[in-house]
Image (cartoon, rainbow over all chains, first blue to last red):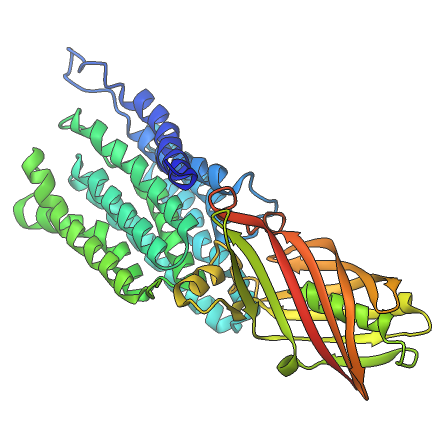
Amino acid sequence: MSSAALHFLLSGLAAPAAAAGLPLLAGWRPWRRARPADGRWPDGSWAEALAPPLAYAAVYLATRGLPPWPPLEAADWLLGLGLMAGLLGALDQALAPPGWLRAGLALPALLAVPLLVLWPIALNEWSAPEAAGWVAGLGLAVVGLWQGLERLARRAPGPAVPLGLALAAGGGALSLALSGTATWGLLGGALGVALGLSFLLALLRPGSQAGRGASLPFAVLLGGLGIAGAFYASLSWVSLALLLLAPLAGWIVPLVRGARRAGPVWTLVRTTPVLLLVLAAVAWSWLESPPFG
Amino acid sequence: MSKLGSLALTAALALAVQARAADSYEIDPVHSSVLWKVQHMGAGHVWGRFTDFSGSLRLDAAAPAGSAVEVTVKAGSVLTDNEKRDQHLRSPDFFNARQFPLITFKSSAVKPTGPDSAEVTGELTLKGVARPVTARVTRTGAQGDLVGLEATLSIKRSEFGLGFGVGQGLGDEVQLVISVEAKKK
């Protein structure tokens, strides 16, 4: 095996799997059975919030080393923002605070994404109105993504939610890699690994509230990577829009056929629209990518 | 590359025996080149260049230590004659050219090492990281208001935050060659 392939396996798969797997196992405790008293499983939705940013951090450390202070690039800012979003998401799931408090804590983290990712361009290239417009518009998009996923996970929880997020993150990773930045592709892939593990554990917990915890860190990290990819690499706006809309396509089947249907077949049916949009995003990135030869 | 340019300028200052004290020169980008090479897969070298750069130098023949060089290279102008590779080089994996559009070199010391050669030390700023570097500069010729210089130096790209692929087939050491023709202002 070449050193590059070994490096990819260790830093792109093993490291994020270990970093995300530990909290997920601690949260969902798959070796435990449902409580005889009420038939409830251990609720690991708090761990779903921590898994993506920890996986991101593992890949970051493996590929870039210790982060600079102050942060220099988008990937540096997203490391801190992602960990903060993960912590907020975990506290949200564990303590179930009132809605106004949840929004009050989440909105600053979400709005900071375009602000911190784009500040070098805002400083060097844009006028104040241009900067305000971009930051506000993309901030609204990230908040909308978070709210859409949050409501979906509460209305129709289950393995289909983390599976849809994992597909979108995996598609984001491929699109970023095709757009010229392999490191950010690995960071997006870390989210896919974490959410894929969340999906596998959710399969062991039918009827659980799986998927509720990941919406905030997902919106911060994939939204941030997507925005950064569009402005600093060559990710097309079409691919970015498809990637951010893809997980929200998980709404389609619950709206049409009802939210309470469960089972492996319905999980696949629910995630089919997500998969189609993800494939479209990756195909668009591939078509726009210049040939190597 | 900017470092090279600035080194060249500094060397020009030190070596231009025909120049009067503290003459100012401007790099002619049409007749100058900023080239680099890096090893690929432990085998051959990949060569690249920057196509957009500028710079100025002040040559003090009487007191070379008082000479000065400043060079600016646009990171987005990197070219290797392969569109996919150039896109990757401009991306955050390497130069992150949108966020860090300029590579700069500013000399701080010139040490003559021979009648037509010198060592030029200065600060290279690349991808937001500033580090001291030293180049060997040789005067290649002079004619009227023109002076020619060639500077060579090596840097470890990982020290400037461009560590992508180091240890996985791409070399860390980048060798730079800056060939400059400068015209007296």
